[in-house]
Amino acid sequence: MPQRDMSSIKDEELYETLRDQGDSKQKAARIANAAANQGRSQVGRKGGASGSYEDWTVDDLQERAKELGLHGYSHKKKDELIDMLRNH
Image (cartoon, rainbow, N blue to C red; front, side, top):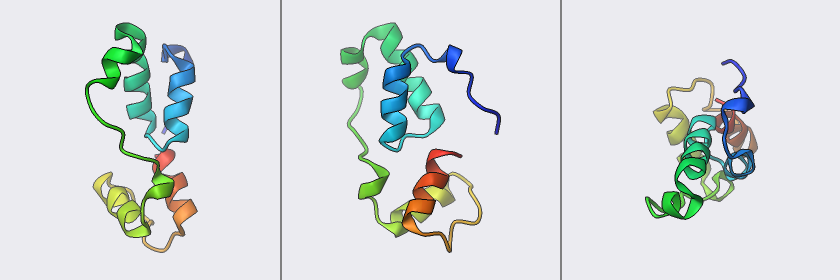
């Protein structure tokens, strides 16, 4: 997958915070750009937080990898799964 052009991210600080919390690159970019356009308080009203991947079980992480169509996750350790999910 090509690297994300950070010039297209309108709120880079929020983008990095979301990535650190476990959001995918696409989701973090979508939220950061919406927050820049509408204001953070407006975007935050749309839904709740999903929590950090560190709080998920290995089974939950594997299920998420499966939902995303990733391969090679079944024998990975928790930290490897988190890295895979964050960098897909």
